[in-house]
Length: 182
Image (cartoon, rainbow, N blue to C red; front, top):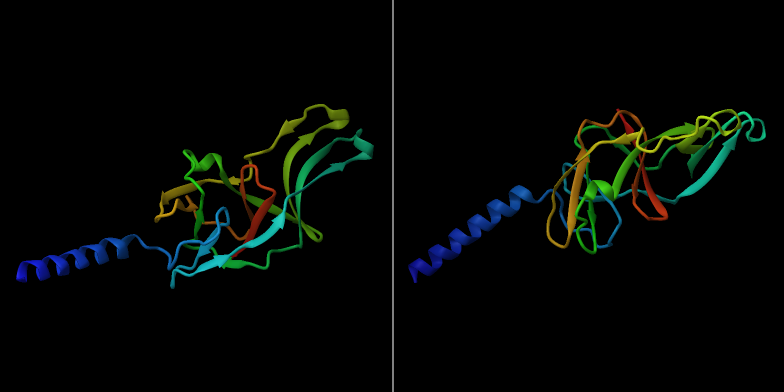
């Protein structure tokens, strides 16, 4: 009897120690493919601003002066503002991707008038010197082991600088936006 009680107490202690050390958030995300920001103090999951991806072109002199392809989002700044230190995100997948960095990306946006933009390609006069700019504004991410249910936790390798950011998934029509303040 004493051995059984002792084993239960020991098992409870170890499960609490190990689970408490790895649990960064209060509960797993319910929706698949929707990222959340993990609030550092409470572990609460905070939703990000969600918008459709809108692609467009900017032309100079009807295209003869060059141009660029952009992904544009409505609004000068995000309604989700967070401090720059210790930001971690969590997302739940239907099945864990073998290479998360090939599926998830975070890019820096430029604020223009009433929109935020990400330039994906540029072309010089009359189309000469066209080049892709994909990856130039990308933030390097570090992926951490998540919890159960194909959950993935990730964070930037270096702290975010103040500005506007977009989190996207490969082959998704929606993007998730946030702003970092000082």
